[in-house]
Image 1 (spheres, rainbow, N blue to C red):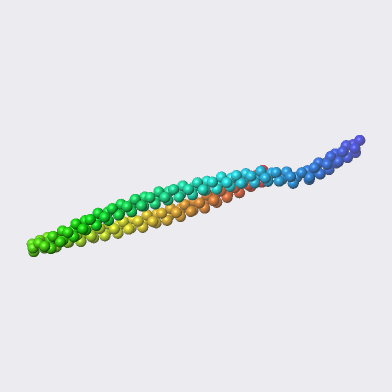
Image 2 (image 1 turned 180 degrees about the vertical axis):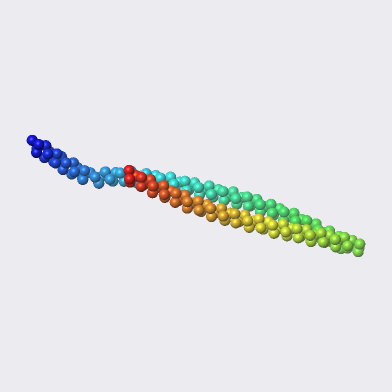
Length: 171
């Protein structure tokens, strides 16, 4: 009777083994499909977030471009004002040419003042050029840091995905 119980158990074990062998592949495929779906969903979410970040960056650059255009317009207005001032000074010069010698000294004095003004203007222009160069450098640094941030986010996402995969494999 004890041998009979052993035989049934062995038979049952063989039947269980056959059942497990027959269904093990299907079970693994179902588990992998679930994990693949999760990974695909995560990848899609990450891609959507990257797309959103890219759009925000484009908007920021567009706003910066608008600001630069406004600054350019302001400089054009300043240039027009300087042109108007130059025209006025030319007409003053013509009037002074028609006057006698005592006004010649006054013109000479005014010419010196205009030279000082030109020097100041050139100095201001030089300072503005330096500022624009520093702004260009800052924008280059900003672009570099954004690229580095993108790499960091990519690496972080890769690490998180690898860690979650590892956790799923070991669980």
